[in-house]
Image (cartoon, each protein chain N blue to C red):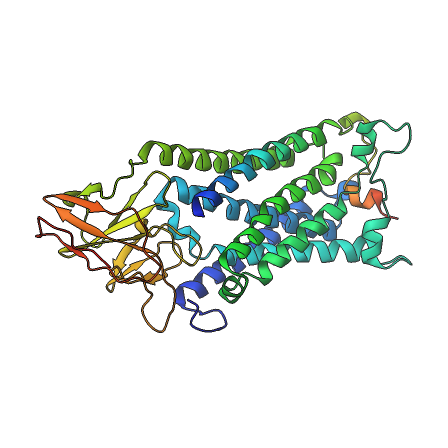
Length: 365
Length: 51
């Protein structure tokens, strides 16, 4: 959380997670190179550097595909929420592997000429526009694909460099989120970098199938998750009145919440804690995680994405942290839980409704 | 704000998703056939294109 700037707050889980990523990456690249060396011998042998380039590019794309799949999977099913916890570590690993690929490719193919290697990447093939009379197929076949990879690497660098919560806080969640949305553009650039580069001369269906298949899966996952949420908001939207019955007491398990969609309003998370009921915004102040899918741990609503915590009665993070979220007035009538859909300013204290209370409002700020 | 962000996110993919898939398909379609490939065995396209 954002009490002050600190380096990554390592714990045992994070160390294990990162160790697994590192071991996985090294094993992937080593296996790729060894199998490549054994598979092609004699005249057909590929140079070890070429194999390392292919291994690092395949590894980076695999990591990026996993990173991009986690978001929509978590929106489609809360089962995948734990994968979100350290997603940024996977993202930084993606950048590091891609950096090895880009650096090695630049050095290997452009480092021995008279032109500066980085300049050479952009100028060796300057076929950015079709020559006069050139067929578009021929132009596209010879398109300078390497700069596409460079632009993608720059985006990955920006994301890796700003992945720490320090930047999230300083850039503001809105700017930070928009900046990190650029990963979609980076993904598109990488797909075209490989399609117009390596795949132009690789006639096997293996790599084309893997890249096309994974791209289709990523696109479909994101679209399905987005459409599903849109439909859900339309269907579940409860008509707005001053007080809205959002759930039955028996629907709520102790220390668990329920997400409520109200028409033209943000989602609300209603929590039961012992014999009390509280309602807060469903949106975590950290990265907009779905608080209603979290649990109450140590008396605090705990975001299922990164573990940010808020007190249910006032939407404030426990000291020394300073995050706040909007709260809602809530009351219990019989077995019904009613919420006033007007959000109160973040951090506003609201008396929780008591479950044994059957009549009357119990939540004015 | 979050509702708008969710919608923006969907629009991103409705726009970018087909673009990526069409770009990929068009990119594959301009590949020369296997028999016409002149790349030397084991070489990457980068090697062919490099000085």
